[in-house]
Length: 294
Image (cartoon, rainbow, N blue to C red; front, side):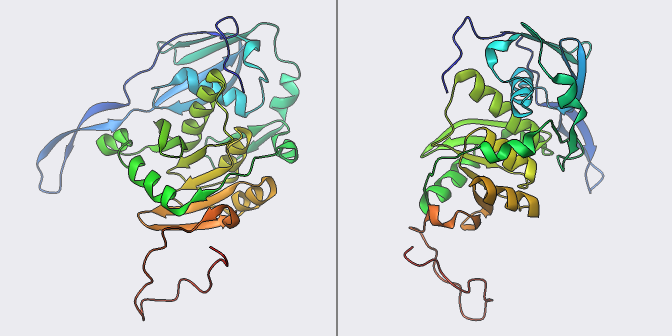
C-alpha cells in the first residue's frame, strides 16, 4: 500500500480534543477527590450530505476515525475518492465529501449487521461475504516478542491510567509500537488506526495488532481487512471471532497479560522460545500437552 500523495490526500480539519475532562468525586472516606473522567462525545457522520452513523468517541483523532470507519465498512474503496473531511464540534458532526459520489451507497446501507461493538458496532454491505477474498501473509511471532510487546504497551495507556473507561489499540512490529490509540470503544480505536494506515500507505503484512478489548467477529474482520496477520489481546474471544480467524488465517492470541497467553488459532506461527517454569505440583493441570517441535 502506497501513501497518498498531496494531490490524493483529502482536505482535512485538525479538530482533535482532549481525551479527559476534570471531575470531582467523593471517595470511600467521604473526602473530596479531584480527578479526570474519559470524554465521550457524539460525532454524526455525513457522507455527501447523507447521514450514516453517530459514533461515540473521545474525539482525539476524529479525522482518522472517520477515514478508518469508511475504509473498514468498504463504503469508500480509494482514498483519492474523498475530497474533504471537516469536523465541526459545534454541531457534533463531520462532513465527508467525495469527488463523484459513492456508487451503490443506498444498497450497502440497506444491508446491516449489528455486532457486539459495545452497542455501536455495525457492519454494512457484503463484508462477511468479502472475507473469502482476503489472503493474509504468514508471519511468525516469538514468545519473547509477545512478552516484550506487552511490557512496552503498558507504558502507552495514558488515558486509561489517568481516567479509565477506555480501550486501547496498537499497531506494532518487532520491537516497535507504530501507533497507539485509545477510545471509549475498541472498534473506534481500530478504525482510527486503519485510517492512519490508509492515509500513510502502511502495509500490515509484517505487523501485529494489539487491543485491550475482546476479540469479536468485528475485530477479526477489521484487522483482516487491514492486512494484519496477528491479533493480540489481553481480553478473551468470542465463538464467531474464533471461527472467522480460522477462516481468514488470523493468528489469534488472547488473555495476554504478564507471562500468560492463550493461542486459539495459528499456534504453528508461534515460536515458544521463552517458556516459563512449570507450575508446582498440585497447582492445577492447565497444560495437558505441548506443541511438538516448539
